[in-house]
Image 1 (cartoon, rainbow, N blue to C red):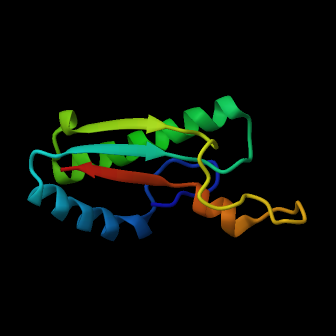
Image 2 (cartoon, rainbow, N blue to C red; image 1 turned 120 degrees about the horizontal axis):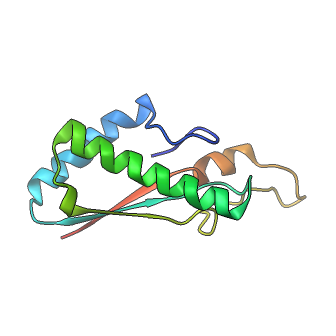
Length: 112
């Protein structure tokens, strides 16, 4: 799931994906879920770490309140800007807005 710059609320566009993930969680009833938050490279490291933690917590909150997933099944962790999946900058050093958007994300791991 992707997030807007400097935000941690779940986007409307992510809700269908979350519903599909919930179907998996129903199938794997005893699985543990890891929810990992990430940011782009704009901002201080400490701020981005906190923002990534808030993003992960927002997704967890969504699963608890919308789909009634048990709190004890989910663990959250924020990584800040430490694990980009694509460059935040182009090779010439200029800003890469598409890359930064892809790095503003939450990833879920379902441990079956």
